[in-house]
Image (cartoon, rainbow, N blue to C red; front, side, top):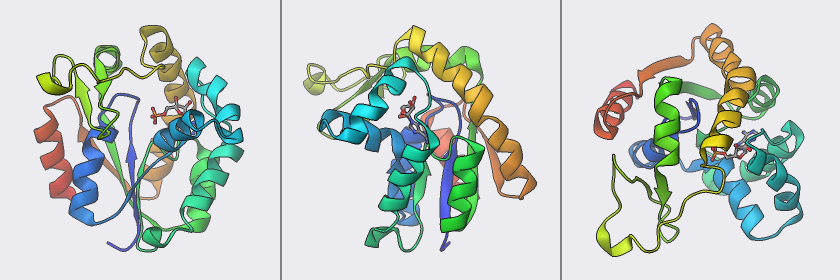
Length: 204
Ligand code: AMP
């Protein structure tokens, strides 16, 4: 594949967890707008400052900010043969802007029912040293790193509900948009990490 791949789905569907494997398999670098925004917030940049309030409230960051961020990232040399988007696009205007700059070859939609999302997100932890994502029950962090794993600030039950509404109102309509273009591949995400990963791998 020479184009880009989009990982699509609600928050907590497993996009970030699966991205590493798909990136290895395809050789395409992972481009996660969520990670880029979190690092802008951590570095105290102007962009981070603008994005922070939206992120903490579980709302989408305005399209203009996201599209600027992505356009800049796609100028990097490693993006020349396509990238793996994780958490982008999240609105139809973002998808329209993307269509003007790169060719999207496949949109992998990881489908997980709302009832499972809250449990998944509230138990989610991250190792700040490696970026590896864990879950206190489904993928427990090894004992030796237990003291350093962190919980994302927006991974609380209350914020998850706002993020889910944002997903249903602004992001979910994109599934139809991509399906009309013949690009959408639906994957049942309500299974083990390995099973989901194998299904995705068999589609690529
Ligand atoms: P994520 O790590 O993908 O769950 O993103 C965390 C938060 O960053 C989201 O809840 C949004 O506030 C913001 N964000 C990430 N990607 C986007 C995007 N493509 N469009 C708008 N906001 C985004």
